[in-house]
Image (tube, rainbow, N blue to C red; front, side, top):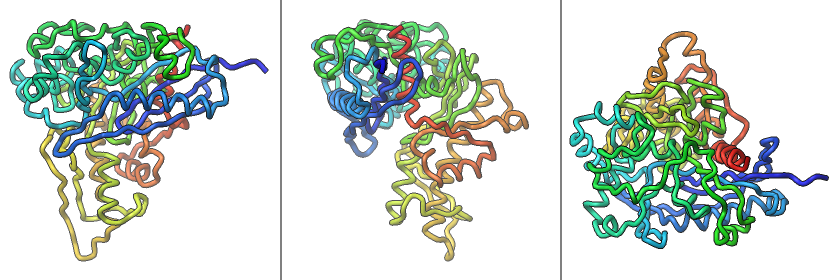
Length: 446
């Protein structure tokens, strides 16, 4: 029996790392290894030690290879897709100076508002970067760091995104891609490069930043000897630039210039996300006008409160997450961590419409509905940014691809189906971010 040639696609998310072992010829998923992360913080703070991500990557790769039953020599390439926006500051040896500020850390909301005003308002930002600063965006976090941890900011010899940090550990090369770079707030989607004026505004030396590869599939180097020893993989295999998790999910779904354009996706995870690959560069302040991994664009809207918020309500009620009923008159906005879309970073949850006959199951159903309505409202904005009328019959009939952990749950699927009125497509592949990363790795491997 001939030996397989495989690649590894890594999904380094907020809560865990998944490493998918994928047949490089057929695209078949052979195995997935997993390892958890640790997130700390309260009162708006959300941080992780990047070294935990690196150890989790090694554990997940080892678990995936063991499950596949294949020898390490079968692996020809690797790519990382990571949680977007996180701020990693490194010393001269490439070690983190402090825990990374994660995308859902809302402490930088005041800095985001200040940055927006300093450039001349939301329109000025969207014209250059495609996105208005919010607490999630890396630029806001860099401003917060300079104000609240100036020693770390002054001592930084490198500024990275989470996926950049891991890719550099793999290849020894400081590199990123247009997709993940477009979520920083200092990369101009209008020009496809770092924006010198924004870097000046932020007080950020461009020498601290990684080079931007042409696409997420570009080979930026080879697996170093040290990384090979740490991961148990062959030295010299291809390392792709990789990308952000949302951009990688689009690749895994076949969205992009060579695939489906303007087909909406709803991801139900820690956050609720809607996006579509498009040839239209969004300048709508309500959206994040990201670049995609392949040279197209990825207009996107993200809510902070999705599956974790609903699970929290279920826990408070002592219910299983599937023990739910439609909310009836009860309305629950589960803004437990503030909110990003709409931009309400200091908001809290709100419950109204209670009656004597309101049941706990209805309260949980109201939490599902509140989270779903928030992200479905953003879907209409997304479709308009793609040049589509969300109320047009042919657009309303366009299937909505439902992905993420929530898409595995009956209650989530039925809530989205009922409230959206759209046909739903549930892709069979469960690890789309890792699959997309594997596709980038396969391209880099030739």
